[in-house]
Image 1: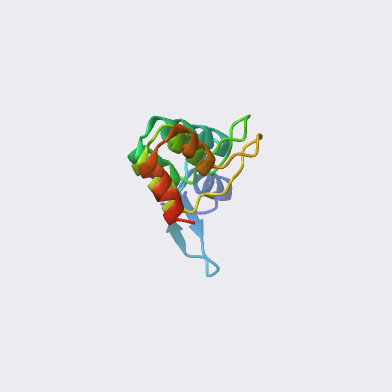
Image 2: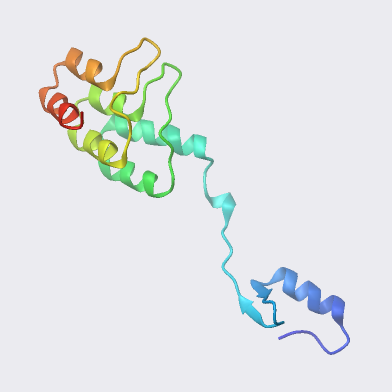
Amino acid sequence: MLGPAGSMVEDLEYLASSDTECDQNGGLFPTARLETETLPPLVDLGRKLQALARDGDAEGVKELMKHGAPFTTDWMGLSALHMACENNHYETAEVLLKAGISRDARNKVDRTPLHVTSQEGHLNVLNLLLAYG
């Protein structure tokens, strides 16, 4: 409830501190506030996505992607898909491919996840990459 009549300062202080906004007709309605300080920066989400992909945590990868984790690379240009493929994490690689990560991304020495997988001899993951080609 707004403050007593004639107390505009109190009314404004109340509105500023509450989850309430005014519509164009002067009506009040509650609003949801996003607590941005609880969300990590996108760079951190990208790094966590890479770590989860390297470790083969497909469910963790899905969860981070729901929160907007970007497809980034590390200092060597390795993507999350490079990392999943290098470590023979089929399910994680499949999750990333379904989400649209590039199968053809090249690292700083011009190698794709397909190159990495071939070198490691991970035939199941190799066939998965070829199926997405």
